Image (cartoon, rainbow, N blue to C red; front, top):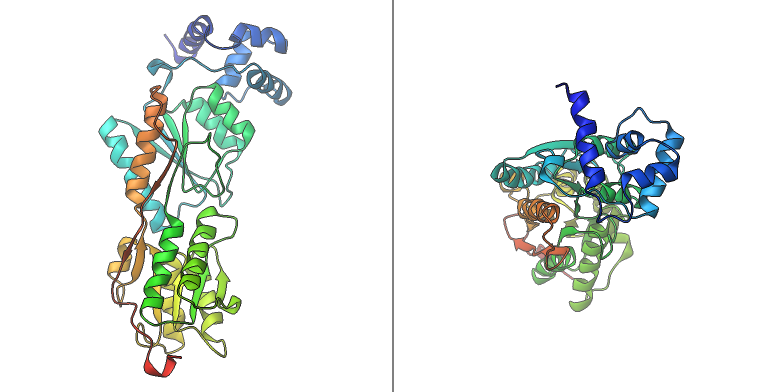
Length: 356
């Protein structure tokens, strides 16, 4: 029997067994003025449906609260993992964590990138609907309301890792204690005697960036150190922006004696700027990062950083999305794992000449 003949038979079964939904596929088809196979094509992300028809069917699925019956026969042995950007060591740590769980469960990964957008495009959603994965994990990304409804109506669970914005109480998510990490990093520097501490944050549109910057502010306040807006810069969590922002800070008439970078890649940019200006780390400038990527142990000098448990975050997200797919309701859908300060050789007290 060819694959083309198998699909309608599977869908006929799901029509008959959808009694727990507010509406069956047949009822959705009648309301839309189309055939049941057409509704089936929309549910399965098939491309051979007119855009107007697809929109009408999706609206009816949402309005009637349709949800496909869960069943192992309907799911592929896949986890969909989507990043807004994939070309970084940070992303590879997350891939490793999801892969650990997928391997235990006998599942495979499908990797996608949304080309820097925080919301993936409809083409990606259509691909997910066609693949019917066991779950979807979005990293630093989110879905709009229509995309969430599409996955929900197909009983495809999803979890957001390190959400860019506030995902809300109804969206399962896994993050880290970013505020506490920013606090610990800055307290470490004030404890060494630094008073002019520059910060290079990530993009303001991301919740983790704002939380780390808020932790920086809180640490200065509790240490009695006035915050100088001239020492605050923003970047895109990449090496290039860390380098650019560090040059700006280090060329100030009163430059900082220490810089807290919003992530390790930005910290590497600070290293490059310091070398270019003839500054020694940590003798002339202390540098601290965030993430604890493997490379931070091998650069010279090894980087003091805040460990974000990326592999554990990814493993937690993978187990959470699989539990949701199996109908297990977790005690909480918002998980924040602890961060910790890792002190290495890139931080030291300011030189005598730089002390107030």
